[in-house]
Length: 199
Length: 307
Image (cartoon, rainbow over all chains, first blue to last red):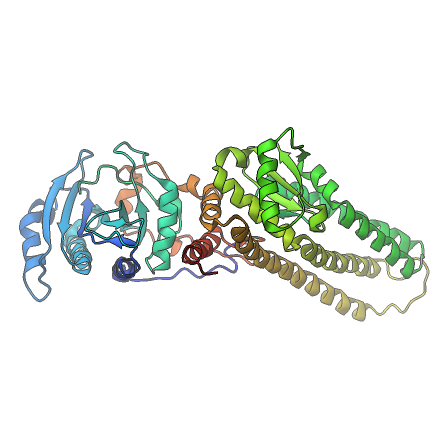
C-alpha cells in the first residue's frame, strides 16, 4: 500500500549523494548549528593481492597532490582493532576534504578495490547554542556514507563498545541534516555503527 | 469503517484494529437491519429514521463503546493523582473543562482522546507510554490529545465517517437490489443499467470519501500538534516523544558495519532497492518525520517569541 503512491526511487550519481554533505555543512554552519570540523576518512577491507592497496601510500600521493585536482588534504593510514584499514584525512576546507575523500574512493574503485570499500566517514560538531562556534566544540557526531547504499546516516557513539550509541539524538540529527539537503539513508536498519573510529 | 470520535496518538495495530472491527461490525449491523426492514416493505422514511436513531445512539454512546473496545478503565484522582494533576493543569491552561481520565493496561505506547465535545471528553493513556516517556514528554502528549478535544476533531471525524458509512450503506442496498431486484414485491422499474451506473458511482463516492476523511484526519493531526504545543509550551518534548514511541529507534541496529556479511556484494546492490519514504494516501497520521520536523520548526520560532 505504502509504495502505491510513494515517491519513485531516484537514481543519482555517487558524487551528488556524497556532495550533499558539503552544502548541508555550509547551511548548518550558517545557521549556527555546527562548529567547524576538518576530519574525515575512508574505511576499507585491506587485500594485499590488490597492487593498489599494497602500495596505497605511494599510490595516493599523485592522486591527491599532483595534476589539476591537487589538494592540501593530509592523510594517514591506520589499522583498527577489527582488521580494517582507515585512511584518515584532514583539510581546513570542508568541501576540499569531501572531494579528497571522494577522489581517493574513486581511485580505489578504479584500481580493483571497489568491493573493498566499506564507508566514508565525516565528523560534524553540533553546538547547542548559537554563539558557541569555537573550533570543534559541541557534540561530536559522525556521518557515515555507505558505498553500497550511497547515502549518509548519523552515528553518535556513547562509548567504544559495540551497541553504545545515542539513537534519539541520531534520529533528530538525521532530520536536521535532511532538511538541509543531505542525502540520508531512509531505512534505519542500515544505520550500522562503526565503534572506535580512529579520529 | 466508522470510528466515531476516536482519536489516537500513534498507530497501534492491535488497539486500532479492535476499535475499527467493532465499528465495522456496527456498520454491518445497521446495513443488515436496514435491509431487513426494506425487504419487509417498510417505508424508506421509516428506515431513515431508524438508521438516524442508530447513528445518534452511536454518537452519544461513543465514549462508552470506545472504552469497551479499547479496554480502557476510567481512573479517579485518588487512583492516579499524578496523571489527573497533569491533565487538570493542561486543561486549565487550554481553558477547557477537565476530561475523564482512563488508563489502558498495555505495554504498547499509545494515547487517545475521545468525546463529542469538550464537556464530555475522555483522555486515555496506556501504561506503556507512561513508563517510556519523561514527565515533560508525557505532558506534551496529553496536551496534543487535549488539543484534539478542543479543536472538536472527534465531531469533524464523526461527521465525515457518518457520510462515508451512509454511502457504504447505500452501496450495499444497491448491491442487494441488483441481486434480488424487485424484492418485496414493489414492482419497481428494474432498469439494470441505471442501477449499475448508480452502484458504480456510489463505490467511487465511497472510496473518495474514505480518502478525504483520511486526509482530513492527517490535517487535523498537524493542527493538534501545533495547538498542543501551544498548550504545553513545549513542542520539542512532543517531537522527542514522537521519535521515542514511533518505533523508529528500534530499527537502528546495534551491529557494527564491519560485521556486515554482505560486504563483498558492495556496489552490486542496486540503489533502486532503497526503501522509499512512502507517504501514503491511506494513512491516518502524517509521517512522524514530517511531524517532528514541523514541531522542531515551531520550537525554534517559539524560542524567539514568535508564533
